[in-house]
Amino acid sequence: MQVGLAVAGGEENPFSPKAHLIRYWNKEIRNDIEKPSFLLSKASPLTAVQTAVFAKLAAQNSLSTRLPEFCSAAHLLCFPDLGPSLESHDKDSSFSGYVDRNFTNYGTDRIGGADVFKNYSPEVNIPVNSFRSYSRHSTGHDDKFHNYAFEGNVVDQSFNTYATKTTGGAGDFSKYAESVNVPNLRFTSYSFQTNGREQNFKGYSVNANSGDQSFSNYGKDGNGAENDFSSYGNSSNVIGSEFSSYQRTSNGGQDTFTAYAFDGNNPQNNFRNYGDGANAAVEKFTSYRDQSNVGDDSFQSYAKNSNGEEIKFSNYGKSFNEGTDKFTGYGKDATGHSIGFKIYGVNNTFKEYAEDGVTFSRYTNVSSGPEESANKLAFSGSLVKRWVEPGKFFRESKLKKGVVMPMPDIKDKMPERSFLPRVITSKLPFSTSKASDLKKIFHAADNSTMEKIIVDTLAECERAPSRGETKRCVSSVEDMIDFATSVLGRNVVARTTESVSGSKKNIMIGSVKGINGGKVTQSVSCHQSLFPYLVYYCHSVPKVRVYTADILDPNSKAKINHGVAICHLDTSAWSPTHGAFLALGSKPGRIEVCHWIFENDLTWSVSD
Image (cartoon, rainbow, N blue to C red; front, side, top):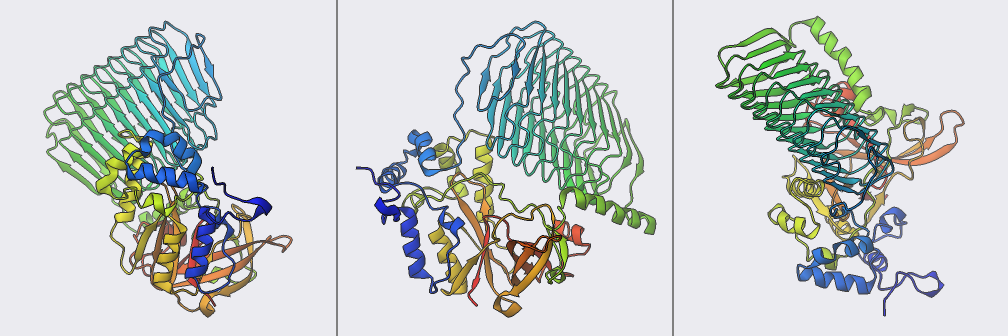
């Protein structure tokens, strides 16, 4: 007989994970203060019978055999397993409203025509699409991806041997993966051995957050191919791009990177063996990583063993808070090449660099004088508006009744997931040394989004604590209670901002209350991590003050929300490139920094 979550009369089933959580809370916490409903709602939806079944499978290392059922019943983040597409489509198709599809060998041997992917997978939480051997051996065939995966969340797209051995035709990626969160976009052997094909990436991953693009063997052995990257990764946050063996042993290729990674925050770009052994190629980097914050680029063996390469860097790397560029083996053993650097940034390292055929003109010196410093300060204001959202960080003086200030978007943008019961998580690996086991359980392919999610979260959880920090990753509310009470004692309260009302608008501060009388206090803040099941990163840092405040509509003065804010009084260990210092105009250790507790995050503190 299957045991459900509730029994007759609407009372909580005493065997449900939520009922167990409530009992545990009442036993471990010594007060009667109301429990946050959002946190109780994160308890596992599994029934007692389901919990027992899946716990047994976990103990037997067999959960992977029942993954779809497990993910659905436990409300987890899992990607669909995409099998080969057996669907038939009309010639010159227009694809709209598709999601979670595998286009395998689609468009093979096509002559002429076009396929249009417009508004494909828009506003989907976890779009997963695979294009394998798409448009292979085609002639004069065009592919257009417009508004593809727009405003998605965790986006996983794979293009494998796409357009292999084609002649002519064009691929157009316009507004691809715009305004998405955590994109993982992979192009493997894309345009391999093509002849005269054009690829245009315009507005690709604009306004995206914390993701990666990889181009492996892109355009390899091609002839006369043109690739134009315009406004690629603009205004994005911590976007990484990997170009490995791009245009390798190709002939007459032309690549243009215009405004690539422009106005972004800490873009990371790695070009390895780019153009290795290529002939008569032309590459132009114009306004590359311009007006970005920090950022790092690595060019390893770029244009190595090439012939007649023409490479132009113009206005390259003029970032605010300069990043680092490393050129290792650049142009090594090349012949007939011409490489020019014009108006180039600073902090550059050149090792084993070609001695001939390289010219440098007008390196930028950011410490040249007061005029340069003034420009830099003015420049920072435009950056703040781009990627440091107004109101995301503020000074403690703002928490006064009557103050009008912007509120950032505090909405939870993580995929919805639930905790797993302890009896299951105790049987699952949770360490980088066991990452391969987790990949197997959750069907995470190499270089996939799921692999990145697993590896990144494990690395963050195992990272050594910063100075004065006490930290722990928890996979149940019970674990969270254990950690909070170990730091603060048993008379604790879990606080969070009441709703998202006021987000992205100006608000007025109403009545303000300082926890612990407004004195410096201890707290344990918990933030969601991206993982297949719900995991929170909880930590306690020294020298904080915690406040609650009524949030009012600045026009009507009506109360619209009740917020929780935490102020960090010691910022001396923070990075000088932290967005708070750009937004507030200071440096580590010189000011306190405050921020709101966002939706579905919380901070624990001692009860007043």
